[in-house]
Image (cartoon, rainbow, N blue to C red):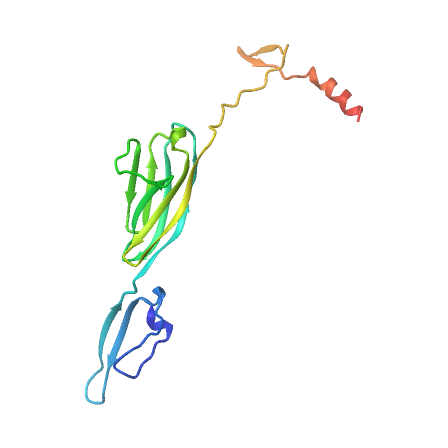
Length: 183
């Protein structure tokens, strides 16, 4: 709370030079004399400041998957967000893309990523005191291929309890031992 910062005044005014956003909050004013009990009033101080982007998250997404870019900005009054790709503002309602805005966070959501979607995006946060921007990348990512067991040429299948089982590549063992002895 601001009172913990140590602002004290014996006057009817409290002057804070060079106020910062950390000093916004509730302040108490107490008036007293020897005649009656003290009277306390609270004053709310709001410090307006231009946006600054505290977090900008890019992501890697495979083609055909859902992807989200995030832009988080602190500002008073709250920031308004706009998204750009290659200096072109993204139109609201673009097919397959949605913008979700909250007072301090904007998300650019791709429902079915295509290669055309990959690239650099710019998030712009603005209020009446100023604006700032951040570059965020949506990049490609390979899907994990299904792991298939390596098959040994000439390996023999065994049957154990009626279940087929592939034998290990035991015939490779002598070859490996031979090769290792050569070094």
